Image (cartoon, rainbow, N blue to C red):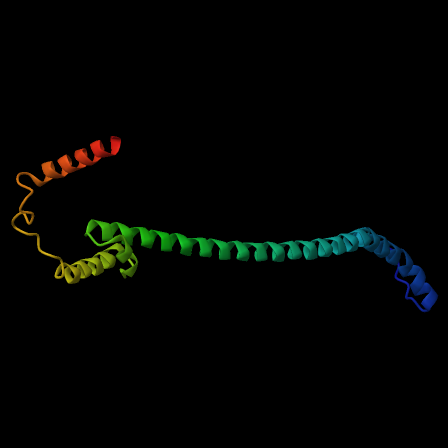
Length: 159
């Protein structure tokens, strides 16, 4: 076993630690040898993140614009569907075409109820069909008389 000798001067201490410091510096240099490359890569990634955030912001604005268009078109389609249902119900129940716009309701059931109540109100003012023929000289079937008049008017136009 080697004998221990105490260190008495700074030069002796430096000489003893010099080899150990050189190994530690070499290890640190190897460990952090790619520091500049990592630093450059970090700067590149920061630039890329900024560009991607800008693209994301533009795409979000585009999406918002598209959502507004879709909402507008959806509202128009709903309006057309409602108008179609109103017209269909009005014609089914015998209301004039012009009265279809006056029907109210949000769904088919409520529109139908409104149309039925309108038919009930208008139905009271309908003229009653006469029981007999109001034309005394027509004689016979009114349809046959109408066809005869029509045929006579055609023959007069050709001469």
